[in-house]
Picture 1 (cartoon, rainbow, N blue to C red):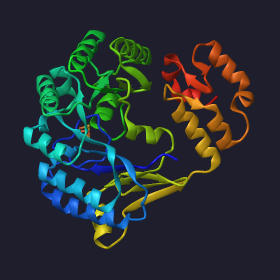
Picture 2 (picture 1 turned 90 degrees about the vertical axis):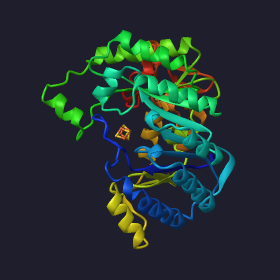
Picture 3 (picture 1 turned 45 degrees about the vertical axis):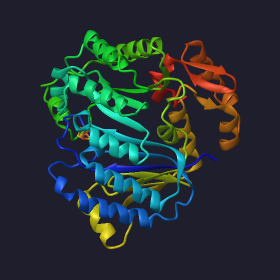
Picture 4 (picture 1 turned 60 degrees about the vertical axis):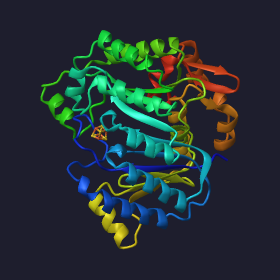
Length: 373
Ligand code: SF4
């Protein structure tokens, strides 16, 4: 059985990016100590998670808005509250604008061995459009500084499909990214989420988004470009040098247990998923009165789990292990869905290889629809 992962959500940002739907608040940095005290309480109330975690992922929000001392203390609190393996993958998300020698030193001393940097683009006009507070050159300098200080496992987040971004501009960002030799790249298609300024502007016709065909072109171009540079396209949006796939994110894709702490964080264990209150106030108030800040929960039945494992499995290049799937859900997937699977194999969307039902790159582009086979 795989070991669980631990996620901590830092709900603070210095400014809000116009496309972002993650829970975070701005203008509240004076409340970080109050939040960290509540987080400590949540850790104490989660002591029933006794199995050793082999990943810790600190995301948000923007974890790098915390001071190096606060981050160090928070990680020490997590180590005191839970069993975290010596060889655990420990990732911290950082904004390139926050990278300093002091921050890097603090992270290294706390055992952080992976940085995920929210670069998004190296093009300054697009960074301004997205509402990011760093610039392209600053991102390059931050990656180099992190490497110089000893981080050799760095992931860069990039976004394609931004209004005004043509193939050439995207290719330039990819080239600048690979010239920094990151071990991992997450390339996301810009999505317009309800409640964001971008959604409002798109609805009012003030922003024109690329159509589906252009998005598909970006997807295939990215896949081909990065594979030529030696990166494995191992999940719809994720690329890694061999051996550098994100161990933490894999847990979300294969139904491994994970504990999420902090406002809006999700947890999954024993077929149950629960999620925390998406409010710093609500979160702190619940913990101050000795309660876990859980907002909702759901129990997944076998059919929910089966659909999710198809949905998540088709997002990964490794695909679905037929033996595991059949053992877990009963029956024989290849026999039961023979017609649909044969059709998708003939169309070049799926392949059956070494006991796995795998999406081809063409299949990963429509991964969500494949799950409905
Ligand atoms: S920094 Fe990240 S979490 Fe914060 S608003 Fe921007 S995209 Fe969202």
